[in-house]
Every structure is written in structure tokens, then in C-alpha cells.
Image (cartoon, rainbow, N blue to C red; front, side, top):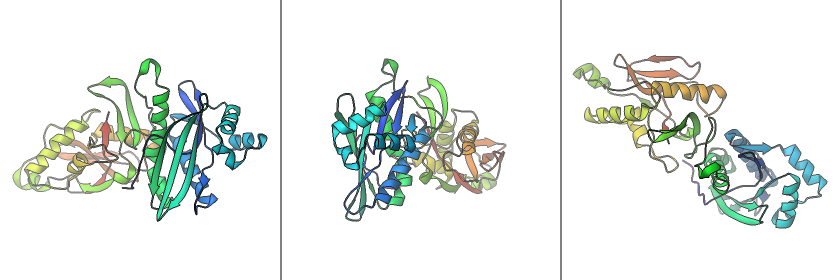
Length: 328
């Protein structure tokens, strides 16, 4: 996994409130110390696209931003001037501006950013991200973007001081994608989040020898939404008891990604929601592969083809793709 260092905020953008939603106009990153303008623009573009994909904010088009910049005779160096930045932001009806830089430090690429509150001209936090290469920004940008959304939510909390809310398709706290919202917290959770794509792996469901030679099988797994976590605990305990290692549920159960360790193998219905709400909409960076669930049918583990959504069951020694999920 990529090395990411996050403090409290990041990157270059201008924010306005649209109801409960921020509108973001992404400003160009400043290229410093050996960085080309082309590389800085690449970082800006990746950030813009990933931020828009969260659908937690509204992103101003680059054409709109460029038009206002031209009309005000705004220069790149003016972004370092609080008063000039505030003038441009007000022309965009913006409440926030995040000013960022991209620079080289040894063999590392360093991305930094600060958030300026236009009403008070107070800098609210900052962030930095360390990359091996510019290309790493694509995979590392998710948690960075989520940090932006969370910081804005913290400054402008939901009505009544409620916790930040998510919609299906948003980036979640762990850098993955939200694919289910049951509307309110019950049983200790409200949302389901798919793990980031770099955590995906291929594994057997496991227990084949126990099934065939010892007539042992996992019992007690469910298929409905909300059963995946318990299923995973049951399966992982069973696999350990029969001497299995490295099975789908065991790896999910021990996974730590972006600082979170509460991942599990989705149930059949949870897996189907992940297909419908993410894969079928071009989100989540899933392959056209078969994915394991934590549910069983007639002693065979259930899986889903993410090419066409077909669900079935199969021998547990097949090696299929696995994407862990978490509930919060």
C-alpha cells in the first residue's frame, strides 16, 4: 500500500456551500523545486475528478474558474495573497479556498495544501502527501479527498451537530466507496463501505479437505444484508479449527487498510449491493471477475460474477476475487 501522510486538509480548491453541500472550484497546484507545470496540472486534474466522484461536493468546472481568473487578471502568484484569493473566491461565490503545492524532496514528490476560510481569512488546517511518483497519486488520492470532505463537514456540521453523512457512491472514511445506506444507525452501524481497490486479492473460500474427508462444514451463515460480519467470524473460526490458512474470510478478518481493521467478507446480499451500486455504475475499480461471498448454499459457498451480476455457488477450492467491506 502507498505511503500517505495526512494532517488535516489538502490540495488546491475553492469551496462554497450549496445547501448542505460544498461547491468546489479546483485551482491549479503551484509547481515548485524541480516540478513541471504539466505534473502539477496532472495532480490538480486527478484531485478534481476524484473529488467530483464522491458526490459529497459540487465541483465547479475548469472553464468557469478560468473565465473568472481571466476577468480579474489573476496570476498564479496571486494565490499566495490572502486578499487577492478572497477576491477571486467571492467572484466564484466561494466560502473556501485550498491552496496547494507540488514539489520534489530527494526522491519523493510532496503534495501540500492549506484551507483558507474566505469569511475570516483564517487558515483552517493543512495536509501533506508523500508519493514515490506522480503516477502514485491516482491510487493515493482517495483518502486525501475524503479528508477534505470530512474537514469541511467538521467546520460546517450537519444540522443539530450530527455526524457527517454519506451517500451511496461517496468515498468512505477508510478510503473505499459507500455502497449501502440503511438510513439510520441500528445495530451499531448505518453504512457499508467497500475496501480500496489495492486491497483486493484472490483466494480460495477454503475448507475443502474438511468437507470431503471429515464431513465437516461451516454452519450458521446468513445471506441477508447485515450478516457478513458474523458470517466472517464463523468462517474464520471454523477454518482455523480445521487447519486452513489464507482463506478468503481469514484474510478479510485480519485485514488492516488505511488504519481500519474491522473488515469482513460480504454476505450474498451485501455482495449483490456492491455489484449494483458500485460495479454496475463504474465505481469501485472492480474487475469482471467472480467474487466470493461469506454465505453458503447446500454446503457450497456463494459467489457473484461481476461481469453480469449472476450469482451461484461453487466448490470452495476455487480461487475467486475478494473485496472486503466494513460497516460503520
